[in-house]
Amino acid sequence: MITTTTRRLQSRLVTLADLKVAIVPGDSNDVYLASLIDRVTSFIESRCRRRFGREVVVETFNGNSKTTKMMSRFPLVDLGALTLTGSVVATSEYEIYGDGASGLVFMGAGWIENFTTRTLIERTYLPQAADGEYSLTYTYGYLLPSDDIVVADSFTDCAVDASAKTFTRTSGKWPLLVDGDRCTFGGFADSGLNIEYTVASRTDLVITVDETPTATEAAGETITLSCKTLPAELEQVAIDMVNFRFQGRSRDKSIKQEKIGDWSGTYGENKEFNEVISRYEIIL
Image 1 (cartoon, rainbow, N blue to C red):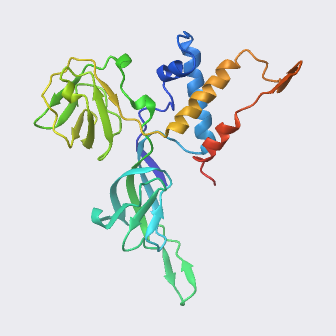
Image 2: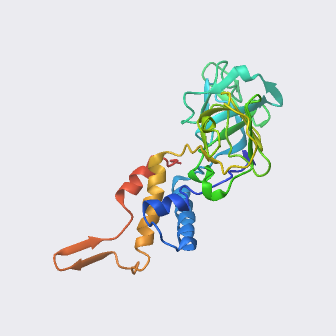
């Protein structure tokens, strides 16, 4: 069972601004393009059977008697509290396996399985759901292009405290950054602040970083923040799919092939789209 405790702040796999730069610079049909982005995002997530935006969830599951256990959502980027039948497990006992892309969590002592051994080779599974039941809070997913803060957002409510190593908003929320994420600020009057930082912790209003900022600065400038982690090939497929549908908006969708003189063409989603999407698809 999975319960979402913090939902993704954004969902679009490409921003309207990036889309217009890539395929339709200067086009004024923003409402239509935005609707295409939403539809393409929905299509890709439905096809892949997963959500890509970063979220925090609590997953309840039984053990498997192995040292690794795969979570239902991935990539894993941060692990929270773990309990076993209500008892807290020390954080030193479990960790993300590898880079988190596979969704595996490592438990050195092994994930206790819900069974009783009757003979050396026979196992009888018990009906008690509470026996060997784990509950793990974790953060999964990507920071999307739409999580970035750009000049167009008119973001001017960020203050810097060099001694506390914090970037503080007066309203709104930071993207769902976690310990170890890398993010780059821009727009501060002191150019030394406009660098890449390593996130140490994050609340809705405050980001604490590992590096010491070069200056303390009050809110006022129009600040930008770049933090996306979505694979570039997936973002590009979203751009290309929107472009495909945008360019074909006036074509009769019932026509699959055309031939004019020596020229002929077949209409349909690009094969490359499917090849990339299939790499992120969950096979049930």
